[in-house]
Image (cartoon, rainbow, N blue to C red; front, side, top):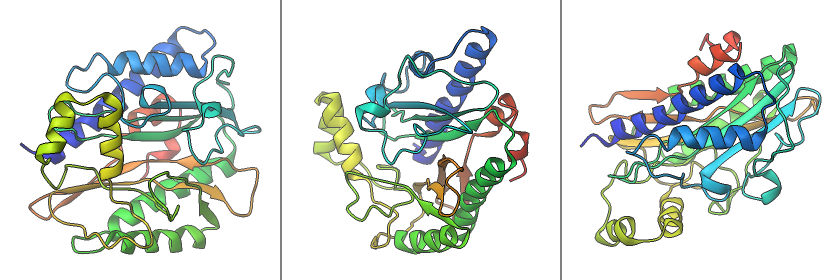
Length: 290
């Protein structure tokens, strides 16, 4: 069983179903609400029987977050956490196809292994050059951190490097986690990618409630924060997901491009982004040069 391949396929499901959902909604030429988008995405995800019907990151409902903003009004995009109810998808918030911004996140879980394939990205339909540059910086940082990361480094090595780069680019990491007391993390490990489930963990997946399964996944993560001593090892996966705001310009929204770094057992590493098809669909070709 290649656990990293399972992680890759699970994330591909999230990305492909997001593209399919958006494509279908855009083709109808009807108003698109946050809840309408989230429901359409969940429907597509549930067509894949190899994953659980809901995502592990709850709340929000079903482990999906969809938030809309515009390039001149993005208060809903500037969240620190999507867990509070006021950041759950709403039916009265509609997508602006000229200047709109979408934050889309899903957290699918493979049924056989419990391995997650989280996916999150920011989609922009507008043309504001400052916002475009801001989004490019975010993706550049993700790629730079992936290039820096090596087997044997601690997770805090990655986080420390990340915070240095982020600050140097005039940005700040906007994150809140109920399981990371430091609130400095820029990602976390993929549970069960580098270790087997224990007997008790296997029983939770087999007989436990969905809430207990989700809680176990959540608590099993090791965070990329400034105190983590956990070391990168072969056969391991972790997310790189800084949520970035400008420290100097309040007219720039939060952006997030969540990637997964795979460290294969043969020593090779691979970055999972899965953004390009969605970039093309949204007219974000300027994001394809990374």
